[in-house]
Length: 358
Ligand SMILES: NC(=O)c1ccc[n+]([C@@H]2O[C@H](COP(=O)([O-])OP(=O)(O)OC[C@H]3O[C@@H](n4cnc5c(N)ncnc54)[C@H](O)[C@@H]3O)[C@@H](O)[C@H]2O)c1
Image 1: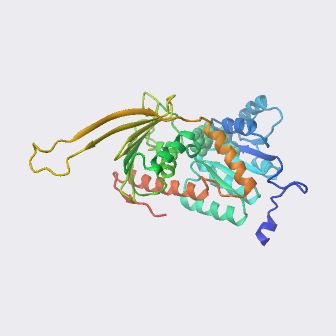
Image 2 (image 1 turned 120 degrees about the vertical axis):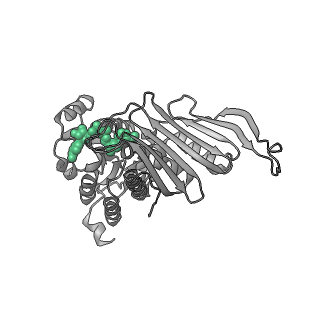
Image 3 (image 1 turned 90 degrees about the vertical axis):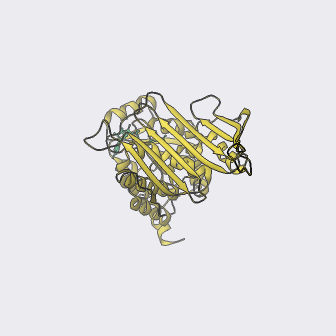
């Protein structure tokens, strides 16, 4: 055992190993998303949601009403000093780095909400810290645990759609304006992580344009259009907005053989369209050039639905028990932040396309 391992005791029970005994989880942040994480950890077997930290005493009271047995505190250090095995960070983005860093230094495994940090250097430091202390660091890229997204990935990777030409992701509604980040940093991590996961590759270039209409004082964009380009030429377009009248959560994937629409709000979430266009292999005159359109059948892809957040929380516990790197590990979180950083630079420079260095 290395010296580092000896400095941070992570096996809490002298009798049962971490793979056998019930795990204890503490949550920091009980605003909008924290209660959803709390419910899922509460519902999963072999884990106890034991403690909550939140600066806002009203949020602690709210939690106690639902979970009378959960210990609550306004002081995050109480959570760090407790015997919880893991800390789940569900606070605003600008707090992630410090809260995760302290948790790792206290020997706790960490599940941190997306995006992992506001700066890539911070994410790099946290990854190194988790590695040095042999702790799990996972990022809440919820869509990577969504059964529909897993199915889209399988469909794309199987080649049923042929060569992928492009993807278009729409994530819009009359959303909650965030006081500290723009729409790209709030909603973008979902689409960037989802598309990376589906394609199994990272974008190499990005450009972004957008608009600030309401929060002009802070110059925080409420609307953003991103274009990511992949090494094989595949293009992914993201439309993100907090200022749209109708909620849409839709991904279109267009391939050379078939096309697909994944609508996260619909009952039939995935529909595969046998549609396409072909042109004659050879034509000399315009009269000879007739594109032929294929309007084949539409097939609903069957899914076994499980709440994605439940799958995510379960994956985190499994990673702790088996000491295996989670799907959305710190490195995946870092890559998403690198895309966002370049997109932010592009957004502030007239939408110029920029190379992403990993
Ligand atoms: N995965 C998803 O689908 C999803 C959805 C929504 C939000 N999120 C993420 O969850 C995180 C929280 O978002 P939210 O919408 O719940 O925010 P929120 O503002 O509604 O809640 C944040 C809570 O954290 C508390 N808090 C802030 N700083 C703290 C600190 N230093 N110590 C203790 N408590 C502190 C606040 O009092 C508040 O109760 C963000 O990272 C966000 O991106 C993820």
